[in-house]
Length: 196
Image 1 (tube, one colour):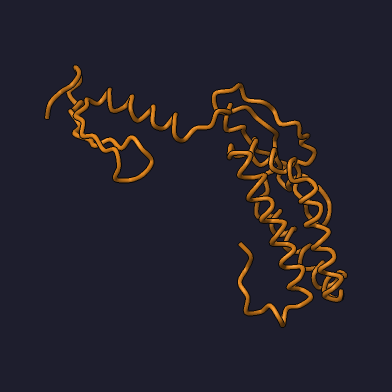
Image 2: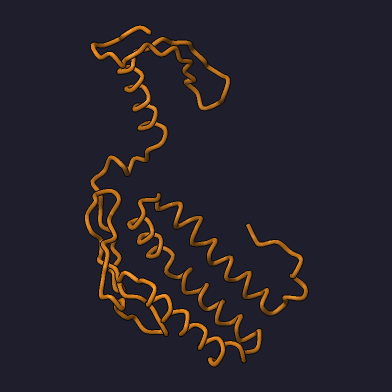
């Protein structure tokens, strides 16, 4: 081992650097010390994997947080324990909102309400066409609020806005439309695969 700085755990790394994004092209052998390697890797990560927005001051999305309770039996309610937990902005570590923290009792209440709604509510007695219309309405509402949902999703977990707004939420809309059509024509579609 060759030391490249004054620490004993530092070694010279023989590496091959690829300066293009195409594997196998523009390869240059280098021997670098740990500090140089660290700086090179940091530069690669910053240049290749970050977006211009990462260098900007974080902004608060123009979306209001209106619901922080549990949705059980069609009502927004506090958790049985009264506990909450903070959901954090991954960019800054600041609290976005305090959310109701569900536990076993809340899960049991939600499952019981869902079971009752399915057994005794209108859904199981609806015609497939009526069910499909509700699913299509849901898809329309999600599509109409695509930008707000994408902003919330980005704010909550730090993913790129474009990923949420142009891929994930439109896929959700497509899936609900697919299942709404399947609800009406299930015999025709039973051997088909889901949309991509």
